[in-house]
Amino acid sequence: MAAVQQNLSKMISAQLRNKANEFLNSRKNANNLADILQMFEAETENYTPLLLTIEVIFTELLKRGDLVQHIEPLKPIDRSPEAEYTRWLNECYETALSRVLECIRRGRTSSRLQALVTSCKLMQAEGKYPLEHTSGYFFPSVRLKNIFLVLLDSEISMSAPIARFQEFTEYRDVQQHGLKVLSTLACHKSPSQTYMQNYLELFDKLLASEIPAEVRKTKDKIGEEDFKVLCANEGKPSFPYNTSVCRRYANRCWGFSCQWPLCESPRSHRRALVLLVEKLMPLLNKPHLATDMLCDSLDAGGPISMLALQGMLELVRHHNIDYPDMYDRLYAMFEPEMFATRYKKRLIHLADIFLSSTHLPESLVAAFAKRLSRLALVASPEDAMGLLQLVGNLLLRHTALKRMICCEDTPAVMSNDPYVMEESSASRSRALGSSLWEVRALTRHWQPTLATVARQVTDPDRRAPIDIDHAGEEMFDAELKKRFKTIEVNFIRPQSMSLPSGERLAQYWEIMA
Image (cartoon, rainbow, N blue to C red; front, side, top):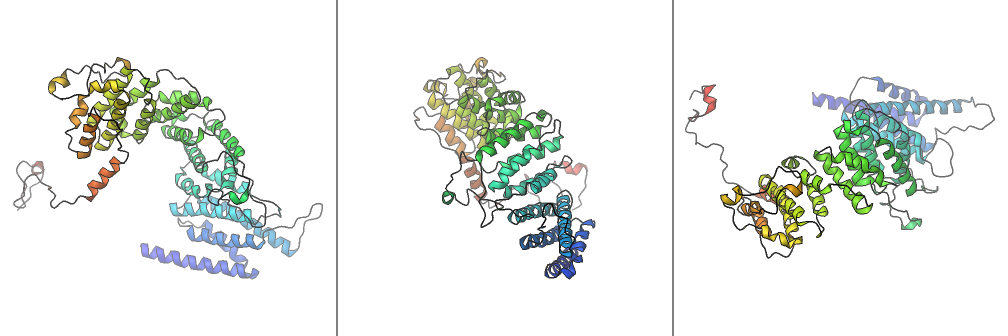
């Protein structure tokens, strides 16, 4: 069946190629273009050959200038055969663009992605060879707006086409005009969750290329990789890229989106926070206006709180924002559930930054060291090494806490531990009266690397920080390289086809030898 479909697709591609060549070579075959456009009405899932044909035909027509209409003001409309033919080609061009945009919503994934690429390639061709005579740089913003209207569909998720669109957002003219167009499409007061998700993903892709503080005016000093333009045309002025314009429209896009009910959709809430803390904070004119959103996100718990913590750190460090009980909120985030999130490494890194000051109260640092050590007992070896690295840094910065290093891990030490793990406040956890017997216990862990790290943490004479940034990856690679001669799959060696004694399967099945 697959071979038949493949042969059929090749036949259709060859047929379309012949029709396109005949049309481009002679106007006598103008009806071929109408036949090709009519094929969009067929019920099929594979539009890729048809989309490639449309791209080739209209790119060539734009390059030739066959779509340019010579309209003179205050003069009657030209009714000559040549003018009528040009108007008919323009109607076909508009019809083709609308059909290509429809294909982004339907069909198989490969066809949807090809439809997006075709629409962008036609936009590029129209920018290089405009439909009207222009003396300067030209970018078809209307075409980009039509593409965005499809990508911001409120009914279905457009994650795959938006991810493919990122290859075009690397061009500076697409970024600047895209932010301008996107700022005009965010006026919905109560959009659907799908629309919010599509909007935030598209916004994120437009900011994939970092907006520089300023652009050097000397053209020969701007590298091609740093300043790529989609609609560049030789012999015409270059694109006037303006970073202040990009920042202004990025602020406007965020100003609309942050007023949406993001908390109703955890996925959109996480996407908005990632966008804010990773890309938008340096671009905002008034970052302190994001304080309310970040504070509400800190109370949400889970991965949302971890992401909001990074934004609050930015406000505290660079914008002099004071947040009460910040360390208690950070302390409460370290719980066993953190290992199930993808942001656990980010949380450990942020905690290291928050606890980097040597002027923090000793009781607060002791509470963190104790809680991290307790979590290391139930964590995977990779996560436990990250926690132990943070504990080792705390002991190195606060030498008075070295008295917590335990020399033995006997049952008496464990049973008489005054530390209260269930306490969410660091000041009431009674960690100063405890010891780090958990780290001592990890010195006999089955994973050799983790045991070595635990011994380094418990070494009172240590003077240098522990460097295990890539230890987790090295452990995984080392396990993959291991070779085993035998792999045991049974506890009892089978002697025949009969099941071993005690096998629960024998209660339901009787296997005859």
